[in-house]
Amino acid sequence: MLQNKSTKVFSETNSFFTSTEKGIFKIMELYKALKLNKLQIGAKEKPQSTFRKGDLLLGLLLFPLHSLANVYSYCKHPLSSTLEAKKNTFYRFKNDTNINWRSIVSRCNRALFKELPASPSPKCLIIDDTDFEKPTYRTEHVSKIWSHVKHTRFFGFKGLFLGYWDSKSFFSLDFSLHKEKGKDKKKPFGLTVKQRKKQFSKQREKGSNGFKRGQELENDKISMAISMIKQAIRKGVKVDYLLMDSWFFCEVILTLALSLKVSIVSMAKMAKAKYHFQGKAHTAKELAQLMKQRKKVKWVKALNLYCAEVVVEYKSKPLKLFFCKTSKRGKWHLLVSSNTKLGILKAYEIYSIRWSIEVFFKEAKNHFNLGKSQSQDFDAQIADISIAMIGYNVFSLAKRYDAYETIGGLFVHATGQATEMTIALRIWGFILELLQVISDFIDSNFNDLIIRIMKNKPEDNKIFRLIESQLMEAD
Image (cartoon, rainbow, N blue to C red):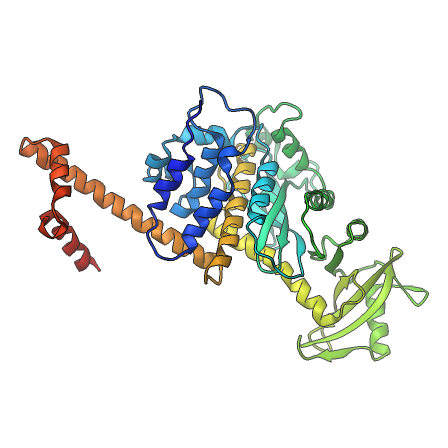
């Protein structure tokens, strides 16, 4: 029978946080609500195993609370004495190709959503991608990717994410990693023959979860986005809108949204796509000029924009176009919606929710090490991103129960308490060493010496008074 360590982990970890602030205690309650000890992870637990996989997952989720960036830093931290697992135990767990991390994230989200208070509309799905830069080409499956933010190429992955906005909080639902082949046929994926040979690789059984994730690497992002959206709706996520930037807006996404009875609000490119208006086909630029000629362009004070709106047909589907620019001579930007009843103010208000996924990217990278895994094993890359998503989602929900304006504020408070406890543990460790030396010097039993000290009243205990005075001076 495997020993269930999660109860011990929760009780001992809770002792790290003594503040009356309720935020950190809500975080621990939500981790309990995930019921990780009952979660079936990968293959069945082996009888000789010391640690349940659910307990190992819980341990990894607690790393950010203690400002631990990775397993290596955990080994020298007081948390290691609480969890008891050694570094290789965690490495084997993250490198396990049979673990279905997509299913684990989904099940954890279902548990969290049961804790969600009722909230009004709109509820939105958001699709977007981000760059994950890697320090070396040796990381398994890594390629050269083009960054539209830095306007340069570097080794890494493109991370495609599906998020959910429930009108108050953002939750990450699913993701896939992608690599880019590049235009140079002599250097596919930006790697020389020599670099490809040196890149880490391992054999995976066909049909294993790690093997399936590896196949997603070369899938186009539109196909993966469609798959993620379908899966989310199938699992009961109820939404009003699908939000995305211009890169993802296309006929297949629009068709999918309409079939799911979900409205699209998206930016679109002022490109060569044809929109039918009053029996004629026009490009976006032509329509914008037509609206200007017909004096349909108006100044919207609430947005500080010049705007015009028109209902058209796109690929035989009704669509409302919103043309906007900041000045009379400025460039037009195009916002589109399949909900033709929306006005410009409401459309912009809904589209602005899309920025919540950008906030997720920033906060998850800063506080939960999203995409910063240094492992060369692709399975560990998937594991670390999944763990970061679960951790972020727990904080996202916990933030609603306290007066924190941002997840960063809650994170700083939580990790601050852990840091204070870490220092206290170090001091206590030094005191124990000092008492051991004293007991050896006076030829006394160490345990008896500790008991005698603990039985003394605090006001009569010279050691306690000394520590207290030193702490007061330090303040």
